[in-house]
Length: 303
Image (cartoon, rainbow, N blue to C red; front, top):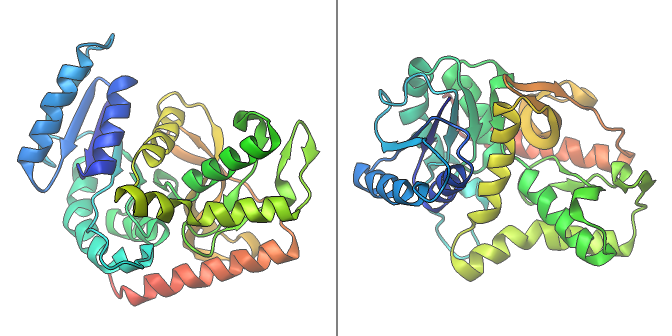
């Protein structure tokens, strides 16, 4: 199988490193505006790969080299500017990158599953569907997967229960208007009732991405492994359920916008979108997320 990563900044490089440590592809292609940066990463990762039980080839190349990819991960992004930046501030600049890369990538790899990482990821996932012409089930945004992982990590520390055993979802927008789906949070069959503790941990979760960014200037490890969780489920057809950004299929009357819901991921992408029984407050939050993302999409104009 063939994996291509577009954008070799800190996130793309971290994903490439994770893919090298878990060599489930026969080919890994690194694409970047600066071919020298991609070549340097390819050389460095090839050296690292020598310490793994792997025969995966790692190369820098072009869209033509990436032809026939089974999975494409798109991380290319303009840099944040300003102290109090928001993910939505990146929308116009990143749309221009999508327009430059995605149509040609889609023509050269017409059967690929595309994973969108670039922010604002919900609007960019929607744009990617339009620009590639791929069916929506083959375009997946990382969405609130990393937020849900952060939330479970905080819950795990607070409750002294392993995070793998906690079923807790952050849904809606990967941004400031995301919400915790307390109605479906549970462990061992026992539901978590909303409390001041869970609300406090959720408030911390919303800000964690910015907190990491403010301290080190970027985030990359968490999103890299979250992305590889999606990749594993595709490659091995695991059909894991995870909160990812998908084209909403009429849930709660919402459609024609991408948001995060629990979805089943297999070899051909999203095989099923689940409809959790949300409370009235959570349903209102979901509608609010839809409106916010739709405003971002509309502000971008025609693709």
